[in-house]
Length: 276
View 1 (cartoon, rainbow, N blue to C red):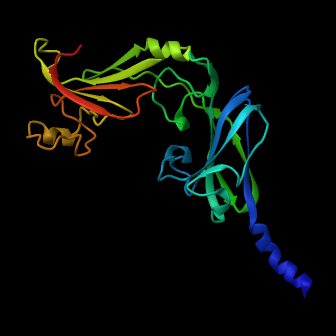
View 2 (view 1 turned 30 degrees about the vertical axis):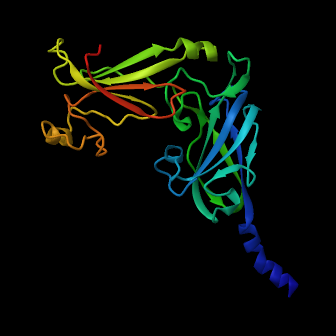
View 3 (view 1 turned 90 degrees about the vertical axis):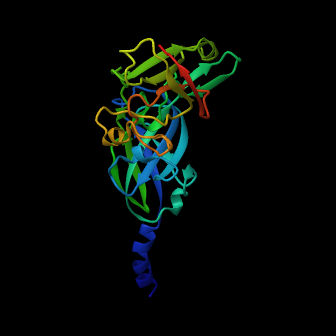
């Protein structure tokens, strides 16, 4: 009877094995060593890539710090890892799609004398899952609840080309001397300007302007937008950006976007101006 009971329970015990991810990266991703934050994303679908869905309402994520990690060296991510929105051990058993990302840090000695490890760039806003220089791997289908899962990182996020100016949208890159001095490397404030209709043809004219500072701008622009054409010339009792529009008709406003590592809130100011 005991032998029969053990045989019946064996499949259940196998399914109940705690899951742990054994993560490593290959020399194709980096020659190493790598210091940073390793994040494993666990989603129910393969597309879009799990790393593209990370958000407060996105898939489960699990993170650990890595220091001086070398190619082929394994890092274990298990129930002790930082997690959101649930612990790894609380994920229901089943099939999932997994992808891992390393947010690569570098050593920085600041002007205040403190030395920190942090992901640095030139001041461009970027999310860690798509930040140039970070490591990631392909999406893998795995079984949660069946023990160890091996995850490999063999890719590096490539550099992103600077945005191209168009007739309507211009981009500025202003070096911040204070931030450059503080971080010990060039840091820039990046800005985007959306020009009104007639800007080039009427250099003497002033236009209303809206300036925003923060991590997002409530304006976009397309030269082929049905919504923009439908609202162009109509009363703007409820501005397009307040209605959540993704396009703004030329002539509605001049938009200035400025962003820096210290910007944590959005501010708006409207005034007639002529900007160059």
